[in-house]
Amino acid sequence: MLQYAGVDFSNDKVRVVLVARDSTVTLEHETRLLGLTADADGAAASIAPAEWTRAADFALREAFLALPVSSRQIAGIGLSGPSGWIAIDRELRPMAALRLCAPDRVGAEIAAWLAEDERHKRRVEMLLSPKDWYRFASSQTFAADITSAARESLLSDSGNDWDRGRLAAHSIERAWMPPVFPPSARTGRFGERGAAETGLPGSPWLAAGCSRESAALLAAGDLRRRKLWCAPDGTRAVYTTPSRPAVVPDGFLALPAPWEGHWSLERTFSPERERGAELERARADLVSSGLEVEAVIETRGDPAVGAALCAAIATGLVKDWDRLYRVYRVPGDSDEPAADASSDAGEARPEEA
Image 1 (cartoon, one colour):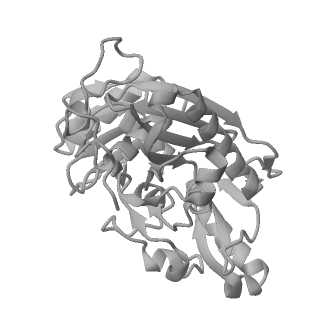
Image 2: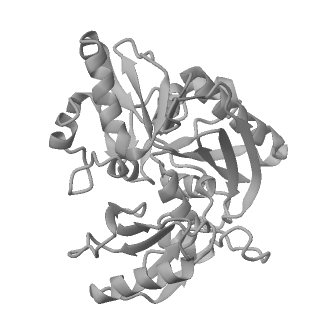
C-alpha cells in the first residue's frame, strides 16, 4: 500500500507520520534533537546542521521499517518546520550553526550575521529555513514555501515571491533566496543521500511543505470556506478566504493560506485570556468587516499530518484538496474507515518526472 510521509520539525524533536491512501494515519515515530543550545535570553537557539538531518533521517527510517513489507512504498514526503535560518556557502556547505528563532527575528538575525564579517557576503550562496535545509541535504534541491516566507515578513504582497525591498532592508540579496512555492507543489525527488540514510526506495516526490502553523491548519480539516478555526491551546484563531481580503479587521494578520490561492486572517491570543470570549470577539470583528462565519471549529491539527497531506497532492495521486477532503477525517474524530482519496480505483503509481 502506498504511503505519504509527513516530517515535522519542532524545536526539540522530529516527528514522522505515515498516511495511507485512504488518508488514515498508519504509523508515527519521533526522534529527539540532541545538542540544542539556547541563547542566554532564551529567545532563540542553535543546533548543528548534521544533527538536524540525522534526527530526520533516523525518524523516517524507523517509521519506514516499522511498516509491513507489503506497505513499504512511500510515494511522497512533505515537510513542516519552525522559523529560523541557515547560510550555505558556494561549496554548498553550512557556514554556521542552524538557527531557530521567532519569525520576526529571522531578517534581523541574518543582517547581524552578515555585519559580523564582510567575507560572509562574498561566500554565501543560499539562505534556507530549517526544514528547507533538510530538503537540500536529502535532495540537493533549493526551495522554500510561501507560508514560511510570509510569516517572516519577507514575502511580496502578491504572495508568490520574495519581496526585494524587505530583503534589502536586512541586507539580503534576492540571489541568496531559493525559489518559493505553494505548500503542495513538487520541488523534486528525494535524492541519493536521503535514500542511503533512510532506506526509502523509489525516489519519492518532495512537496514544498509549509510552516508548522499552516500544516496544523491543513490537518484540522477543510477550513477553506467561512469557518473560524481555533487552535487547541486557545492562543490562535484563523479564518480563511478564497482570495486576498480587501479589508483586514483590526487585530488580524493577513497571510497566504496553505491552500493555493487562499488567504488566511490570523489573530493570536494571550494564554491568560478566556478563550470563549476571545473567539466570540474575533468572530464579531470578522462579521463587522463583511465576512460570513458559518462555524467555529476547534479540532486538533497535527503538523506532521498536514505535511503528509501536502505530499499526497504533490504526488498527483490525489488530484486536489476537494478530492482529499471528501475522504479525509481529522485523526481521532472517528473510527469509521475512509474511502480511497486517489483518482483511480486500482493501485496507482506516482507520476514519473
